Image (cartoon, rainbow, N blue to C red; front, side, top):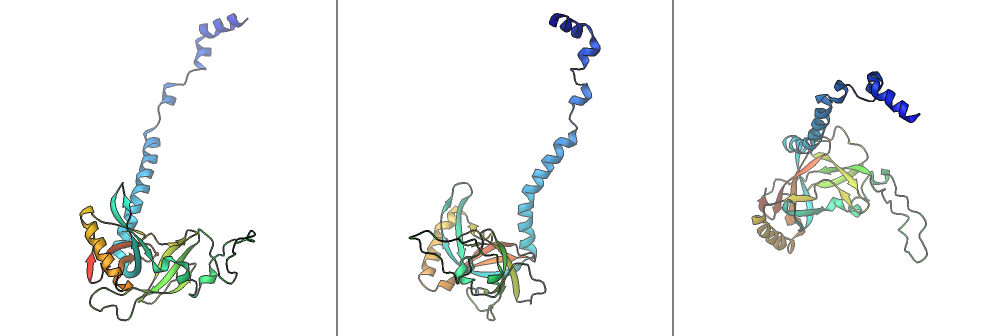
Length: 234
């Protein structure tokens, strides 16, 4: 019986065509290939485009920073920067800090020191804005002075005074991040800059600051390093 069924399928061309796709069904329209490709290109281009927009339209802000100097095997030498406003203990006394979502701290196991219940610990992954204000004597000669954090907000505040700006950050569970933690420099300049930073840090801490641009959305990009009265821009 199985042999007869097979003969019928072979001899009957109409039945055989049921198992074959028509030629037009095998061709994939070109737009199905181009649209995903264009979307991927758009996503890749969006990152530098945002940075260019911020660099062109953003307001110049000075941040106090403390550096370390690892080596990036893929992109060359860079400086990793940690700011005063990266530490929660420098923000927790500001207005608006306690409005940020609290972390889910549960009972501590026996033998473990529990966090101070009076301290407001922020939930990891929380996005927020730090409102910074420019110093009154920012135009002095030499290294510019760092802007001062005034308050913290869950939302990007509107109608800020001309001497203030909102910088967007995110708490990663250990410290605050602002997308300003990496500054790349040419390999042939790295040793010179790090020597200058070392000398500066042995003196006044305020002698090493970073110039950034912050746009109206709170996004920021690093622009240059100020080491004492010297400006390094790459």
